[in-house]
Length: 230
View 1: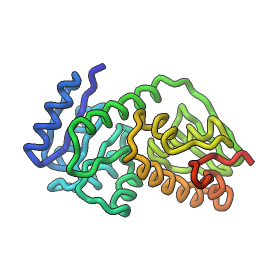
View 2 (view 1 turned 180 degrees about the horizontal axis):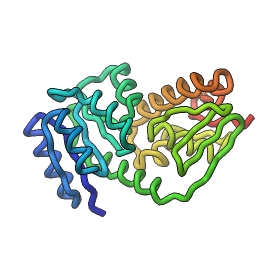
View 3 (view 1 turned 180 degrees about the vertical axis):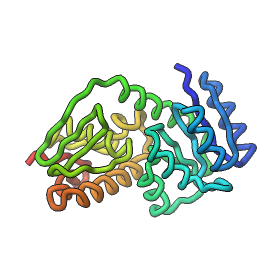
View 4 (view 1 turned 90 degrees about the horizontal axis):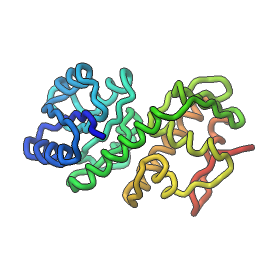
């Protein structure tokens, strides 16, 4: 199924290559070269997905991500030359759904895009349900989470990970299983991404729910993560 994809990349060679590969997949691709244009085009076109370079002129890509996340749940794939864990966590915490570090393979980029689109469409097709596990409550239709009655603001990927765990409380999910359920394809490189999302998720749950929030997502060392059912 064709998707409307906005690419925000100021490197002409990179943006041309991304466009070629995404259009081969049957997508309608628009390209902008600065952050201000990215914001304007995202608001007017309302794309199904945004490929967003971090180092954009006029408005930084991280600022674009932060602003758009207050306005929309559109999937965002960050492209970054920054490789430190702090930079990665910042991008995910601002609402990015996934990230690629430069240099990257165009085939991997298209695979990430397919996975994000698949997940987004599946979420839109799912029926409503409210999941309750202990002090935790998830409304999958309204994209809302509460801990002990207090609201928690999550990114779409954090919500998806929490939803996967909440549908089977007490079950241990390996990183590979979380990748398959949330990201849609198995890539070893994404295991650190899972850890980063879970780290942010725990921090937000603890901030909202104190001790009850902190105990929600447990690490089972050597195996993965589970949602406490106690």
